[in-house]
Image 1 (tube, rainbow, N blue to C red):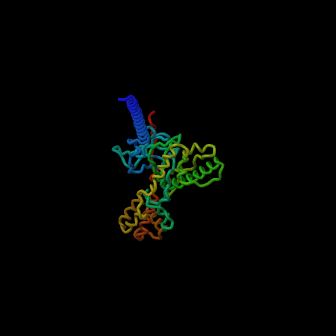
Image 2 (cartoon, rainbow, N blue to C red):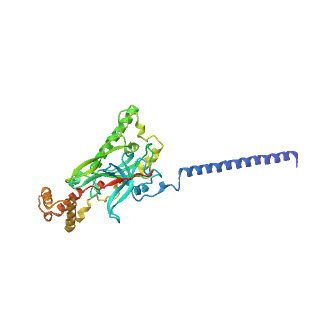
Length: 366
C-alpha cells in the first residue's frame, strides 16, 4: 500500500472512531435525559396516590348547636382523604349521640371532630334549596307558587378545611348542607366576607373595588364566628348554631387569609373547576315535591300526621285549633288531598331539628 493510501486509511478510521465515540456520548446523554424526564414524571404523578380514589359518596359535615361548631364524622374524614395525623388539627374529638341504643340501652355515639373555629375555603355554593324532614326536594323558585311556610330552606356548600398556615387538611372537598337559622346566618356572613375580601385587596392595590368571580373567592380562607343561641319554633325552644361574624381581612393582613398567590392555588383551582353541578346530586330531575305522588294515600297521611302530632306533644284541642287557623276546618278528614299533604309537610317542618342531637367532648389522650 502506497504511503498516501496508508495516511488516508489511518485518518478514516480515526475520524470514524471519533464519530462513533460522539454517537455513543450522545446516546448516553439521550438515555440520561430520558431517565431524568421519566423520574420527573414519576415524581409529579404518583400512581399509588390516594388522590386517584373514586369517591362514590360525598363526604359531609354539619353544624352542631351546642357547643356551636362544624362537625364531621371520622368516617367522612376518611372519605375526604384526610391527611394522616391531621384529623384533629384545629378541632376536638366529639361524639354525636344517635337515637339508636346499644346492648346497655344507651345511645350510640358517632365519633368525629368538631371545629368550633373552622378555617375553610368555600369553593362551592348552591342556589337556595327547599325540602322537608331534612331531605332536599329541589331549587326554590317563588314563581312555582309553593307555600313557603310548608318547607324548610337550606343551601349546600362545598368546602376545604385548612390549617393555621392555610394548607389543606384533606384531598376531596366536603359538603355542608345548612338548614334554617344556621343557613341564613352563615350565608349572610359569607357574602359579607366576600365583599370584605374584594375591598381589602382593592385597597392593597390602590384601586377601586370591583366584584370578583367565584373562582377568585374560593382562594380566601373563611373563618366564621359560631355561637349557640336559643330559638323558638312551633312552641318549642331549642339550641341553634348561629354564625355571628367572621375574621376580617384588611389591606395590611390580606395575605394571611388568601392562597391566591401561593403554589397550592393551582390545586384548589382544579378542584373548583371539577365540581360543576355538584349540588344537584340526589335531586329529582323534574324538581317536584316527592309527596305529590302520595297525595291520594289518605291512610298513610293520617298515620304520618298522627305520629308527627304525638312527637310535638300536642293535645287534641291544639291540633283542632291549628287546622282551623290554617285551613278553616276542624278535622283532618275534612281536608282535601292537597291540604292533607300540605298539613303533613307543615308538621314535619315543626319537628325538632336533626342538628339538635346531644353530643359530648372526648379529649384525645396526650
